[in-house]
Image (cartoon, rainbow, N blue to C red; front, side, top):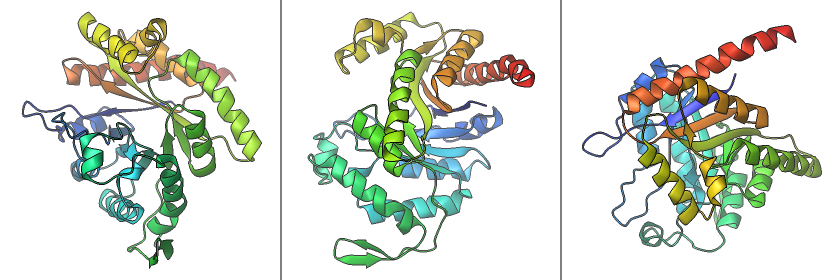
Length: 302
């Protein structure tokens, strides 16, 4: 069955509402996701590790998903130590989504001394070392050999990005690929290319987890603002941008989820924009339930 995830809402004070992780667990969500995006210009942003650790403390089963962690921002050994810790604290519920990072050159990137060039190379180096570090194996990092303990199971590693380079990175180093802000039709074309790359490299085809945004309340202004951002900031064509946000009632959302599944997605993670987060979270859960009921007879007949 198609898996679903979403991000936490924020409280009136503007901080993540950790208690809502339990609500998502009760609604049957597969995971709660947290973006790793701190710009440093006053735009609200939160440390993903800390938020997911807090979510782990108030839940029992729901997965904890990075969507996605910027590898070049941090020393690899530090990331590994944090993931080991989060695995132990959560009972091994982590999915480690990673990428080369958004907004390089922002005040935050400059303040922490993160490199603006060579991000892909640094990400590849980190991906080569992370599994051994998390498993507690002796691993060379620069001039030092590092052994971290206590060892933890290596979580599924999903590589974010829509580019050819990201797809190749996912095939080489990952268990999954995470394209974002993409319509089902565009995803289907990308999946064909992903399979070609996997065949070319002699590797399995990674799982696919789509990242996107949903507006499941009657808010035409929010939909218009979001699509305008896709055009102005991401350079999408207007028609392409209109096909990205997920909108409508649960039956319509179920149709969109089905379209993503048919295009090759195993999981869909949607940030819920607009107001009334709880109602939207319930609507997305209902849409997944409708998808399951609709597809069950087809599965029985095969």
